[in-house]
Length: 223
Image (cartoon, rainbow, N blue to C red):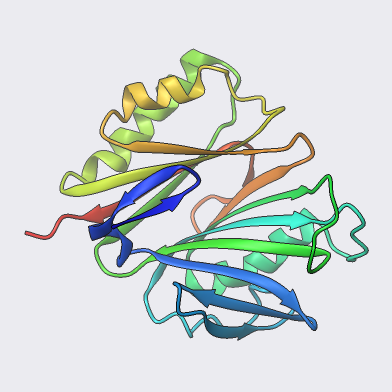
């Protein structure tokens, strides 16, 4: 069996090594559940400032896709989401990718929803990269440096990558081809956001960065 995520098929051996979660706002509480068993974990309204110890596996990377309804009356924006995520950075030392956009239509169940992917556990590594240039030569050099300094050290790992970018991104149009040229052993999937979207990464090492995001997750092969 395989688990399908945005058109990308993840091999079954990797499924049990990924933590999947989704959330919805219900009565000012965020309900988090994982897998098809729908085990509910309660967080407070601001999501990351709640207790995330219910996820026993060590968290390496959290990716949050936040969608506001077109008639959203909520008093916070992407900047607030970044502030809330900083609490999780301080508490857990995890890397957090945040993408937020406004839906062209009203959401059926609430004014906002948040789909989350969480990667962690033993023998799992994660690294993030934020595109800061529109120059193809510079971007290629930065990808090569990222590979040399970090990703190439995962020699015994199966690797996947998630690319988060907006339709009006300043990233070079050839960005994904450059990525594939450097990381030819990494399966890449892309999440395209609308033009009103914002995406950012928070990490203990680099702090807050905004722009198109590449996140690589590695799963150690069992000997």
